Image (cartoon, rainbow, N blue to C red; front, side):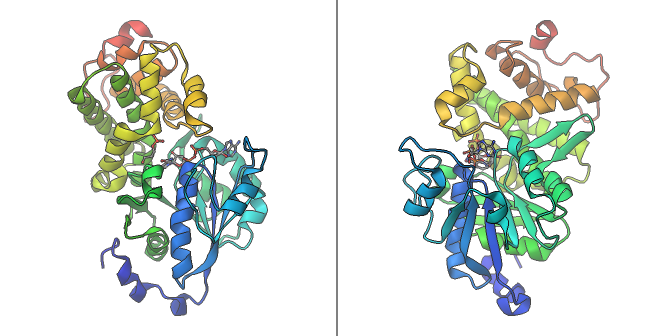
Length: 385
Ligand SMILES: NC(=O)c1ccc[n+]([C@@H]2O[C@H](COP(=O)([O-])OP(=O)(O)OC[C@H]3O[C@@H](n4cnc5c(N)ncnc54)[C@H](O)[C@@H]3O)[C@@H](O)[C@H]2O)c1
Ligand SMILES: O=P(O)(O)OC[C@H](O)CO
């Protein structure tokens, strides 16, 4: 049975075989969170596997109209701030209280900017039954002195629940407009729950496939945001398609190399799923990281990424700049900087240590093994750092 073929699931998972209907809560109501809730709500309205209602936890804020975002979502069935003009579905119910939002949920969908997951896990610790299943749509990671923690692993460890991931070439606004897209579920061990996630998300225009490589899927989604910053910089510098293609190729190579250093079990074939090369392409062509990086380069770095994010994204958050910072901590602590010139240069540019033009001023070489520390890889940072 093909995992992407949802019709076949009627044989695998039925209400009679499980005998319970799952209740879904989406944790996060930004741009992608709202679209994810909309996709899920389409399926819960029709599938006997799920309760009709989809709860969505909202980080409360006041709209320019003076209304609370939560009240506005419940009244208009629309997220006027993060997904204006799109009906979320009659069965989407917003709740600003995270503990009440997850009460009775059996399946939790985590979809917030990655910097907020620590606080969310603290709020939920001890409140979630171990039988609850989680899935993370969050593209990011946590780097501390103790090492790298992927967000799904943080959720697993903090809340003591199973956690899959869903990543892919998924610019949320396009999926809201029902343009055909693909996504990849990454799972560990439990195939049955992966099938259920596929069923929860799949629609005729959203084709989901599952692979047993949770780290591979998640690290692709996380690292491509840094490559998208590099792609936006070359756009802002007025360079052409060849340059951008070169950036994407080098970025993909660094993604693969780092993925294998951190998680040796990562499967090469994962890079050919939607979460890999397809997400890299769409983000470098049409994503927010690309867009803000282009503006950064056009301004010659005079406005910071934080300033541009606030000015251009109306509350939406970039993940690429913080991921570049986290990568820099990691690469520095491991002595791996020379092997990742693109990742390293993006961080140096974002922090103003070198100008945006530095993105094309290195000679690329990514060896198969860790290189000797003395190897000089790129030109710009020899003088810049
Ligand atoms: N937007 C996309 O096209 C897209 C597609 C695929 C994956 N993703 C990933 O999904 C994740 C969520 O992205 P998004 O687009 O839904 O969000 P977003 O960029 O629209 O972020 C804004 C969200 O952050 C919330 N927020 C602000 N301050 C907060 C706080 N202190 N605590 C908790 N929440 C707070 C806001 O209320 C809002 O819901 C990210 O990891 C992103 O990379 C996004
Ligand atoms: O808009 P971005 O750059 O955050 O990218 C959005 C998605 O991750 C694309 O799959």
